Structures are given as structure tokens and as C-alpha cells.
Image (tube, rainbow, N blue to C red):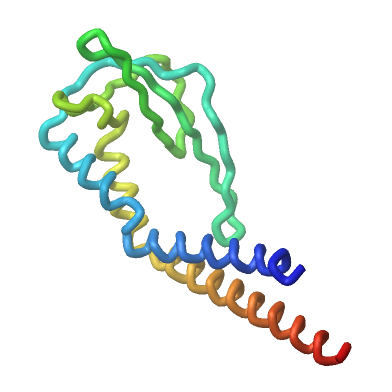
Length: 158
């Protein structure tokens, strides 16, 4: 029973750690390096946007923000490749420009500069740091009191 009550605080701590990592950029370092390589040496081709996209709304400090997740496909050397692109604007087109690495088309982007700007903006964002620290503290305090309340109730029974 004690373990079940610790699951929620543990999840809160994990989410807090993810926000904390976003502040320092450790979750996007590899992607940033790929985007820099795409920017320098990328080849451009035309791709197709999937007509079905995912619309999501997130709330940051109570302010709702919509963003859209698109899937695209493109062909290089007779092989099909795909990727995902998220944007805060709804795109009303079926074709798009894709930048890919000639030696590894699996590394690709529909918006190299957009993604780089987004990563640079998110890395060092103090909001991520604050949210992460608050969630870690809430999860830790919740876990502490969950454990403490179990010990008190056990002592009262004895």
C-alpha cells in the first residue's frame, strides 16, 4: 500500500527533472547537433505533409498555447523517409521543403532554422527551471509526508 501512494510523488519528481533538464538543454543536445549539421550540409527536397495532424493545447502558467504536430514523407534514392514537425501555426499546404543529410536521410527536418531557434529559446528558459524545481520540491515533500504518515499510523497501532 505504501508503494502505491508513492507513485504519484515519484511521477511528479520525474516530470520536474525533465523540466530541469530542459533548462540546461541536456535533452536536446543531440538534436541540436543534427540541426547544425543539416544547416551546414543539408540537401533540400520536396516532401508531402500528411493530411492528418495532431492539434494539442498546453497550458504554461495558466496560458493556453496551441501547437500542431505534422508528419511528412519524402523520397531519396528510391527510399521513403519520414519525420515529424511541430509548429504553433496551422499549415494549409500539402507539400513542403525537407532538408536532409545526404549520407543519412533519416536525419531530416522540415524547418531547420525554426527548430534551432526553438531549442535555443527553450535552453536556459527560466520558466522551465522554476517549474522543474517546484515540481521536484512538491514531489519530494509529498513523498516525505506519505512516508511519515505511514510511520505515525504504524506507531499508533502498536
